Image (cartoon, rainbow, N blue to C red; front, side, top):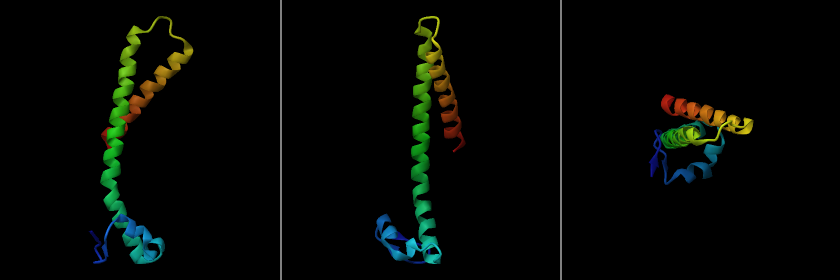
Length: 99
């Protein structure tokens, strides 16, 4: 059960979407319901994003470590793929540490 700051009781998150006040965002009750929903969903989505970024960074680093066993010379297509893996691992690391 979700109890909003105004004292409105909701059984679950789907009640927020089924409520007609929630669909009318000009109504203060609808704005409060949306803000309460965002407060509920923020930790869940941030945690999932951090986990996925960490997994992506680890997989890309593993790909980059495996370049030692590549035959030489590296083709341009493979070079671009490795460059993208490096860029993705750096961006995933930055996103997961900034959050």
